Image (cartoon, rainbow, N blue to C red; front, side):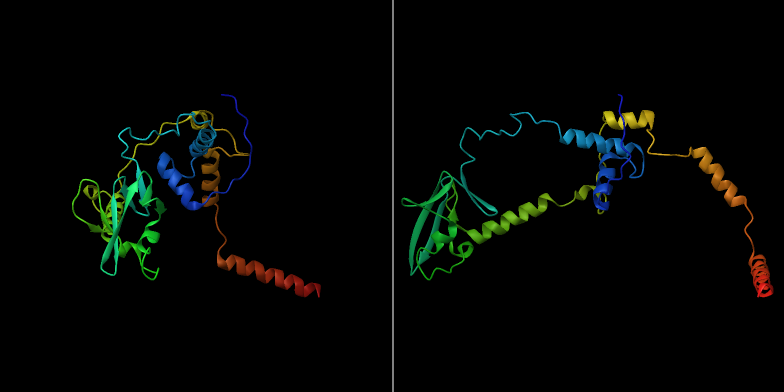
Length: 227
């Protein structure tokens, strides 16, 4: 793999860099993570297969229905509302709520009669296909929200605060190239020279405060003589 490199600084948000480091299993300041970033950029630019985004609906028609915010109303769900002691009904047909020949939203159905400011979640009752009981829409929404919240809770089996460790993804061609060749990002001092440089600095004697004071006094005396 013959590749030339551009010496250019690219800024990344800290949280994104930390998340990418955790995802790849590479330390954020390591040279290999630069190759992993190149692999991620190259993968993002790859053309997707034409049939990748095509998802066919189930042949039994179970995907038909009306999505009311958090609550899905399958085809055949009956809606009931009332006003003045009289009930009126609508039914989900395909992907629409039908009241006679009209397609309505839940709010429009709830306010077909009355003052027009009723909350559909509290005014509409639902009877799902295959069930005899009526359930208020607000109760269905609360149950759906509770189920959704549980989906994003951490796995309790791992203990509180512990995250399941995921294996690092395999190295891509750029990351492997960085690992094999370690391309230069400019003028770099080999590690052993850096170690020697810092060790020599550490061994060098540091001037004491008395020496510094004595030198400052000599400079002051020299300036006084020149005057």
